[in-house]
Image (cartoon, rainbow, N blue to C red; front, side, top):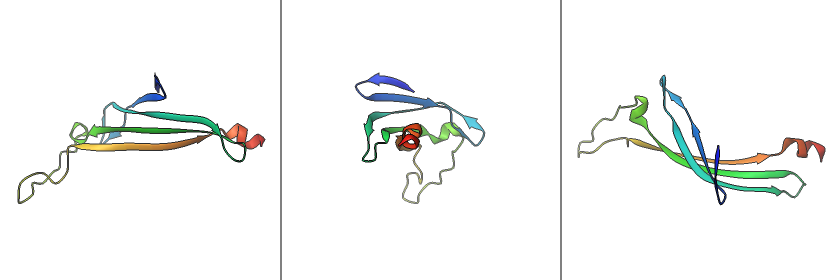
Length: 92
């Protein structure tokens, strides 16, 4: 994960789908850290990006009668995560 500044971040990973591995980059924001009502430490992350499914060998796409494709080439990815400091939670 790379901090881009102003609460923005970038995460690059190498997912494997059908024995094909390609890099995928998600960009997003960081919220926190903050203290919840019970004294626990929390931080949030929101990430979004897309992958080209055909780059992973997922080329199945029957044509519609009226023309066009059934499935889009790009797949949207979205991650919403809340991280909890386990050590702080145990100490409380």
